[in-house]
Length: 407
Image (cartoon, rainbow, N blue to C red; front, side, top):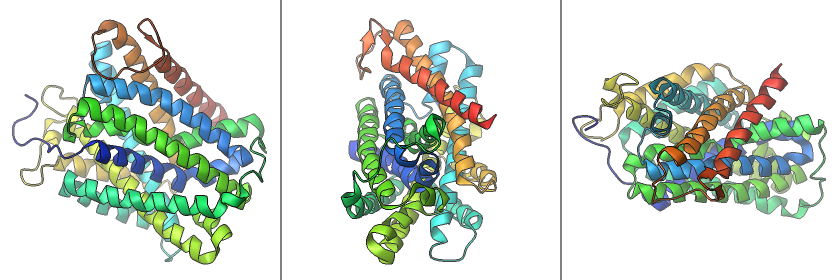
């Protein structure tokens, strides 16, 4: 038995899990990073989105199979521990995921601050800190309340993206989608940045212990959320580069509001800026939920990777309240870095290293534990998963791209 005392409450079904993933992915990617990516890719932003979607799908299929094998909140930690029988590697992987979660929450909170400045003269840093505090409080209050907030916020952010798609639809085809002002290096950098837009799928596994029939539900939610968001990303990207010059997008702190203003006037820009506030706030909430659940999971008595006290569940709220508090506080220092692109880059490096290890874990488990009746990633040669191999190689390649650019 993992811990004494109350357990997490199972309130999440397929709809909620899919909305959870869609909300996390959309808020981080389109609203927070599209301007940075357009600034280095130009018209090639669309191919960059497609390449990033392909890379995310490869690793997403690995997570789907692993979540079907082990539907637990500690996710990555258990996958790596079962595959390599190494507590140190499993702990390093869990630490990487925890760092990714808090750094990403900081990046998206800063994006929230940028959109808020459209309405009020406030420092993005101050706004980001206030948002993290508020979302931590909602996270503590309960998973049922949190998922209802998430469903409402996700509906709003999808509506905002559909506004952008609608106002820019007449410009599709007006931009050379192979235009790469900075060449292949710029496109590669954009793929790296845009990959931040897909970080959400790996966090879906962390609500497995609050999900009904998690063995079936979590894999489906991962596949659905990646597919839905990829379609929206491409359509929004087409409207963005069609309506606004890529240089202006790259320089804007509220890029989608700028796009809506160009296609629908000042009122449209204000509407999308308002929806962007909801979207980025939603993403911060889900990041804090998933990170606190992972911290809760790896702190259980059978693992003791982190202090056992962090696995305590509040008797009334049925949430891991100490893990919630630690996740919120840990995100605050990264807010002080101020620049969304820099913080997103740090997130990606940590995330891609974790993804490489997780893909390697599935490759190993296919041989070490071949008996499995749940979801199985497609495209295999014998027991070798070609998608997991592709996910491993592409994750390492993107890290190399980033390091080479930094040097």
